[in-house]
Amino acid sequence: MARVFFSLSAIILVGLLVASVPPDGQVVSPSPEVSRLPALEEAGLRTLQARYKALSKQLSQHMPHQPYILVDTARNHLYIKRQQEVVLDAIASTGSGTILDKPGDGDSQWVFDTPRGEFLVQSKLTNPVWVKPDWAFIEEGLMVPKNPADRVEQGVLGEYALGFGKGYFIHGTLYTRLLGKNVTHGCIRLNDGDLKSVYQLARVGTPIMIF
Amino acid sequence: MSLCAFLLLLLSFASSGWAGEVETFPNLDLNDPRSLQEASRVLEAEIKLAARPQTYVLVDLVSRTIQIKGRGIELHRIPIVTWSAGSLRDLKDIHRLIARPPVVRRKIDPAAAVEQEPISLDDMPVEYTLSFAPPMTIDVVPAAGPHLLQWIASSVKTWWRDLKRWGGSLLTDQSATQGPHLKISVSVENAQSLAWSLVDGMAFVIRRPNDK
Image (tube, rainbow over all chains, first blue to last red):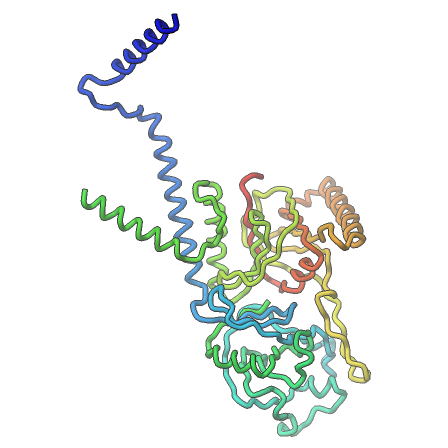
């Protein structure tokens, strides 16, 4: 009985296959209505993929291709990175976030933050001298000197300094025990060895990313 | 025939060349059209922001991370524990932070003999609301963790604020002026770290998932 059933099934199946083959023996493609939709979807997907890839490439063109300096002001670390590779990891000191009233200037204040954002190395100095600004005298309760020569202090910034605008520098320090803490007036302090490495690796124009 | 072969060869070179470049969203499903569209929208916004010397924030709800970025590079990453949003549809612009969370700064007294303590991460708020232009608000709240009491206090405050916001929206059409609303919970340390890193006018971009 089962043999008869299987034989009949096989005959019907072969018959259906023969009927579906066109007279000239070619294989019929699915009807256009059925095939067009997946093809369109496929084309749309490829377009989206191509757009995504093009945009990714466009974004990567904005990334610095030379080493850049990264400063984490919350954790007081300075890194030199080449793309994702960390070339140098240094403990730093950054801005204290404290404020100081400007005498005789209403409600005006100095805010001792390290600025956040993107900057460039604008200058590279060896054996820099510190020209003390007004706040350095006022916070110590001293009179601001009239003679500019009285503002100059030597040997407190280390052997090198890298300026990144508006009076902010990456420089050395005498107070190495305070590295890792937020104690500066906005500048970024490093120990002598790390400062030398940064000086050697960075050029004028090297980006500095600070967050 | 030879032209087709040449084009195929060219295509394979092009795709292999791309594979070697930086992958912006490593876990992106390249076969999902909606994910591709969203990733491309975010990339377009990032290209605008990366063209200028600034840092910006990508809130990636897909990978559950907050990324501080500059020039398209990820500078710092903060994991999101949980998030919720009223509607994701309107979270598609570049939003600028109106003001960073308030920080209590210590004032230097030149007459005092004792030096003022600098501010630190511990001085940063753990729970705050960020307001943006065009309108959007992000509530940053601490996730439940080792600081249980802090979390309970914060949850009560958030609940009360949500209730007031909801009540206000019933009386007036506040939702139209406040814009979309996102609530993000991160660890206490990361909430403080984010508050520290934000600056006034900082740009935020949100990457939305598909499934909401």
